Length: 118
Length: 325
Length: 108
Image 1 (cartoon, rainbow over the protein chains, first blue to last red):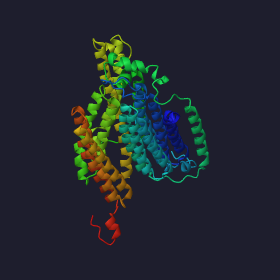
Image 2: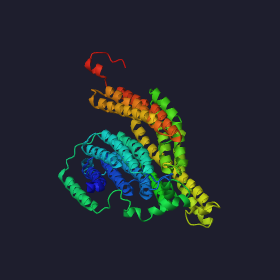
Image 3: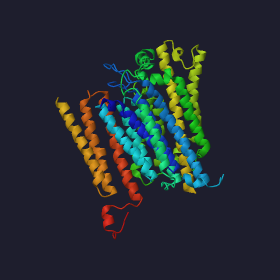
Image 4: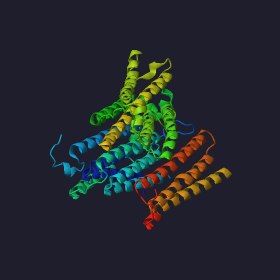
């Protein structure tokens, strides 16, 4: 039982990661692929935050009467990663918009065999 | 109890992700992704990462969803059925997942205080940062002081991403004779939006300058302020919004934020310290640290605000152009 | 002690109203009735839960913050429901009564 309590967080993270990965490689639509990529990315965030958790700890903001704090380092890394993540997602979406304009479609199997129109 | 809540939320997250796989309606997919972001923000709160949860709720659920909806407006909301064989991806995912789960068995148990991650630098951050930096929020101390160089890189990445989007899509021109294109008939929306937008900007400023003491900081504040202007653009139309916050101004602001950040670092050179070591900024090292952190958080906030808003302008400008054509 | 009991009562009531909202969301037949059910969760359940939480604080800064959250929620949630219903109407969605009696003139 303690075995499951010790590891379920990692297992669900792996499940989410694989769900995102599956969307990225099997989806036909580029916007959906980006959603999959974001799900993948969020699962990595979850992994880091799970590692930073200390049982019985509290949020890493100094307060009276609290002695155990969770690890602040993963929080810092992930906080910046989220903002950078949305910025890179925006670049991906901008590329999708340009692909739509150049090929008239965002379905992968449709523009694979189209000639370059640019 | 916390573990139980965690398990329930993670289960809901897994169901949401599964649903995304099978849905063909991309509008629903994007909405589910918003739900996914909110759920993960709840999990972050439950795992004590309040700053991260704050960022995820404002960025993941707010800005990402708006950008994806903007893209859908340009590309159509239905996914066509694929003729790819579904077996191969399933096989790849299955094998990778099994390998990762096998690998996870070597991980240290979840939440154990003796885990290697809590042994190396974390005790120093937790024990010394309140005295060395003088701030109660350790996340801000680590973000803006101990690992300031790292954060400078991240800010530059946000700036570079904004430049990338602008070079792909371009900013909309500022319209002299502003076209009335907003939601003109939605009186309730307009009134409530006008009431909320100033409050949102006020809240962004609070988050910006209160980040030293509670959850918050430049990243969140920038995104919240950008969200206020995005709301304005959605309700009153893009031409009005570009009239209030001009695209040319945003370009300058995005660069200015990075400049403030790096400039604070360089200023320390001239005062005899190391790059981004704020001890020299005031006679007292702790006061110096505080000044330095406020300055660079301001830089981060300005850059993130300008980058997010100009990215939104770029997408909205595209949508507006398609409508006119 | 009395405060704590009162607070628990509020919280349980709030949870109950959220639950009814969710049931309504699943059981009601069309979009407009569902929005109605969902907005119950937004308004009355939020008010009850936040009041319940305020009673558990020491009536300091935290209580004021909760009060601000309540005011913000009361401003935005009904607006969101309104916007949803209005845009559905704008998109041409008919209410249940109208779909059942399709001959009636649509005077919107």
